[in-house]
Image 1 (cartoon, rainbow, N blue to C red):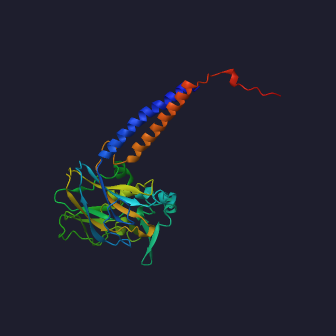
Image 2: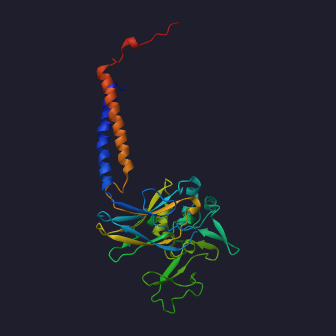
Image 3: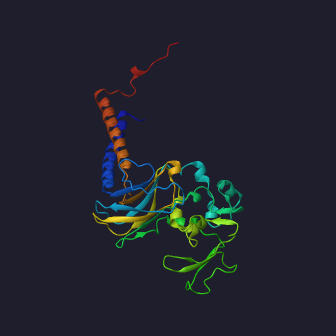
Length: 344
């Protein structure tokens, strides 16, 4: 049975634990250095705005976003993009995907049902199956950020969960690719039925690849929609795509785009070359680019510390209130005078 002493002591104990934790979390959050630039959508108060808005998808508009580092930033410096007013948490949106198809398996009727109406499309009068299908895969964020610096490099590998990369996203089971010994080699050709490509794909290092996608004439693959952001060799294993496929719980969310492994001193100017393709005007959304350091608690988050301080303060107040009441005006438990007898 809870008696007043135990109740008051429990409230005081929770308060004594939560208040110092809240102060610690706030101190840790304040140590995180964060900078953000909004570049599309209605300007937000207090956020620097550098206009690179577009009115149509796949606009391929080129801009530069320039950050002036005001405080020293210790590595790793994380690069996120932030979306506003985009409801990835809608039930229909979350369900509109085929996880077996994303793992390289053939699509079945249940996959088509979950993905409908984005399971097929008509191109030049020919109906083609979408691979991958569904709302999540086919609303992929395809703005491109490139750090323009001779001193610093932005890494874009290792941004997705290892379990997702290893187990949940695979190319179609009959897909194959082959690197050419030379792009000028006569054998580096897509001619014949062995390969489905129309021409070899060349990577940033100058290596050419031949590739084959099964049922290429009747299937529209991811790299065909989002070229050159998604290349045909990676396809659904592209880590930016994998990060996007982990849907967010709130309408304003951040997703990791890359990271910088060097410390950045105050006064440094960082320039990002932006290619804007993702249109947000139609749903009154916003887009931002964010640079942030991190610590053992993660990124900057003032809400956690505020929550602990709020709960701790309320518990302390209740503990003092109940304790004072019991001390100055105690009620003896089991006192018969508080019993009421119902008369017939």
